[in-house]
Length: 286
Image 1 (cartoon, rainbow, N blue to C red):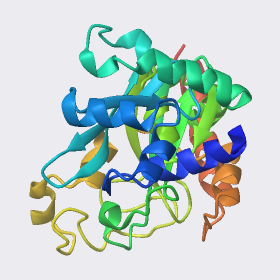
Image 2: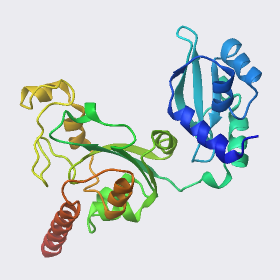
Image 3: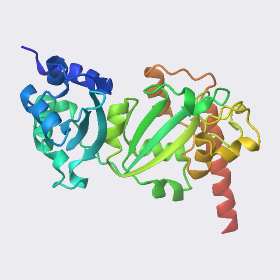
Image 4: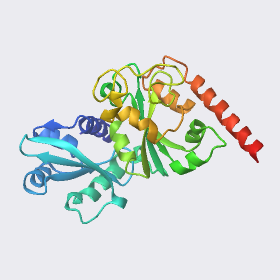
């Protein structure tokens, strides 16, 4: 008989590997550990075609697994927090069962962080084709904060990277954990340089000087015409920034296997200098 640790590791692996084809008994048992195989097949084939399964990190969150009869496949269709979802939705028929199973089987693995905002840091190499070449789980960092984005934006006395670290509640490079975090609080996408950790500008990284070579959307060389296609990276820079990556985030990414070619401390130091200058000007004006 498998212990809960073995069940969890296999469950996490098959959940992360979705979508998958087939409804074999072994695959069903691993993906739906809280239910009997017969019960799962009945709901997928004769019911609404969607079954809720346990979260791996955040309490009171479930993943909805949908079955597509046309290509005989299972896919993760949505991740929801039970506190923010219509309990009458028929897709949540097994949600409580999934949550109860997770609380009992995963126990200390589940957390309930106070999350008011979640930032998705996309690490992009300006000299590559950008977003199109991202490797999921290595170059995307999900950061949960116990402060909202307005607090960070309006608090101009401290550098933004310092404020992010002070408000840090949880971080992960796991796309499954990221989905669970994104059910909490505000959500924003930010784009930072993969080489040095600084926020990206329109044509380049102002910190390490590397310039975008190709548009991540149309793959053409960067130029004025390129921006008309609504490139995801370049458009993202104008929407929101949380400054360079702080020390805690950098250390976590390095432990996850990422290598920064330029010391991220350089970008942090530049932001501190800019913040100090802005604070000095503000005091002078008053």
